[in-house]
Amino acid sequence: MKRMSMTTIIVIAMLLGIGAGATAHALIHDTVQQQHVAHYLSIGSTVFLRLIKMIIAPLVFSTLVVGIGHMSDAASVGRVGAKAMIWFVVASLFSLSLGLVLVNLFGPGIGMHRFQGTQIAPSAPSGMSLDGFIDHIVPDSVFRAMTNNEILQIVVFSVFFGIACASMPEKARVIMEWTESLSRIILKVTGYVMLLAPVAVFCAMSATITTNGLRVLVNYGKFMGEFYIALFLLWCALIGAAYLILGRPARRLISLMREPFLLAFSTASSEAAYPLMLDQLSRFPISRRISSFVLPLGYSFNLDGTMMYCTFASIFIAQAYDITLSWSTQIVMLLTLMLTSKGVAGIPRASLVVITATLSQFKLPEEGVLLILGVDTFLDMGRSATNVVGNSLATAVVAKWEGQLPEQPAQPATD
Image (tube, rainbow, N blue to C red; front, side, top):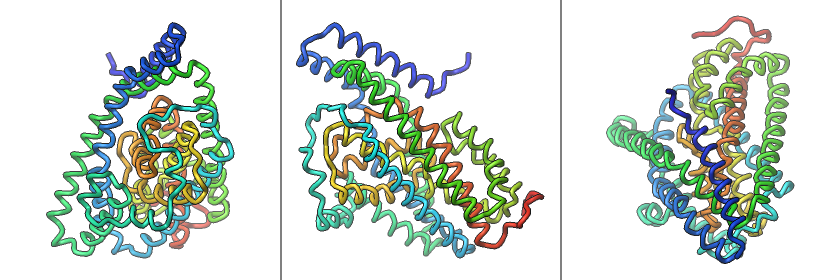
């Protein structure tokens, strides 16, 4: 018998959780008793959440240092690397900003009225100041930052550490090998933790519906529908940029990317579409010297769909807990996500790790990530497909800027 995929198991767990929660809500009429039952049901999801927090610090450090440390390859094609990074930064800011604007416009979490447990008061996040931001971003001790899961401080240290390793590749070779091994081990640990996701989904869904009833599913449907509307607008913007920069060849690029797009959507994995993307880009044609460098870089620094989801989901959680965030705080959150979303390619359910770290950074209820856990697998399909669109466009744009795109593409490039 074929083993069921994790996606199928999560969907089954979600449906069982909905059934269990609806039964408990129907049988227990006292609100206080419902909350007690929900508390015990949520123990499994609490364990999962704590395990997620456990891996954040080593995961961010190892993946960022490995990604930046290997940027020594960019020295040989420095101009290409610089142009790629400029595009990645612009595309990332646009994706994050579009998600931020649309989630405030749609308000998918408004009306959920989630109970906030032992978290800091709702007013805490809106009091973010410049001094407080500097305190959070500049570490005085990397060990204290890792102990307290101060994600921005870990990012700052990792960036400096990675740049230093890249500047002295021979002397840093042993350190880079050790860090890469650490990265692989932590990714393996992350995979083990994610095996508990179905249990967490069952517990989270049953606890939520026990206290709120089936009416809460309307909010989930609203959240999913509005996120896909946001993704559609992002696709339109990216395709528009392709026509603006590439001209008529953009139509051929879109045609070639159709198959990788569908593969990423159906498997909920942009990594699964990588080999096919590389082959299709060579048919555009784009030189392998360009695509083999820009595309892997994009998988670490240009995950447009993932970044939009991170802002969308983070603000959705704040809305669900009736927490009002000022625009200044939301902009700081956007810039934080701009940093913390880098280097997470290949991590199972990477966005959940990034969102959990962001909630902790801004003193938002960390258990809020459990609200999106049940529907995350459906949204991951759209995110992954969007990452394919963004990275294929980025590769073609850099090739265009390098003057390596013919006016009438015909033959594949394999050099």
